[in-house]
Length: 117
Image 1 (spheres, rainbow, N blue to C red):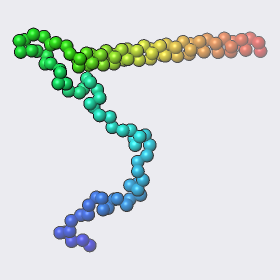
Image 2 (image 1 turned 135 degrees about the horizontal axis):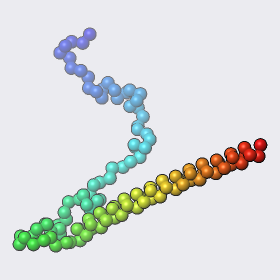
Image 3 (image 1 turned 60 degrees about the horizontal axis):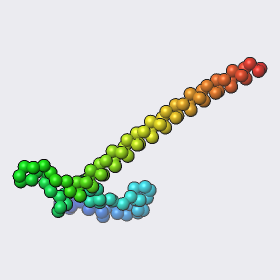
Image 4 (image 1 turned 120 degrees about the horizontal axis):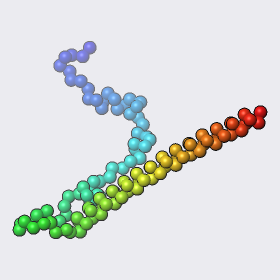
């Protein structure tokens, strides 16, 4: 039995030989690589050429290339979002039409089989 003054062993000493820890992680979680946040011009900080929203004179913001890039990225994402919504609505309507046509077709087919027998 251990004395009360002995310290507990470290976690790594106890569990590094455990069968669960013997194999590296597999599956989809190990296939992802971290993506730096600096790639997105909207979330990255202002560049050196970026001017503040108000000048010292109190006049409005003069748009620069960084502003144009951010606005283009916003517009592109908004357009993609709108197109995804249109595609989703189109697929739902098409599936509904196919379902209705299938019901009408099989109903007519069953009625025709009943009359022939």
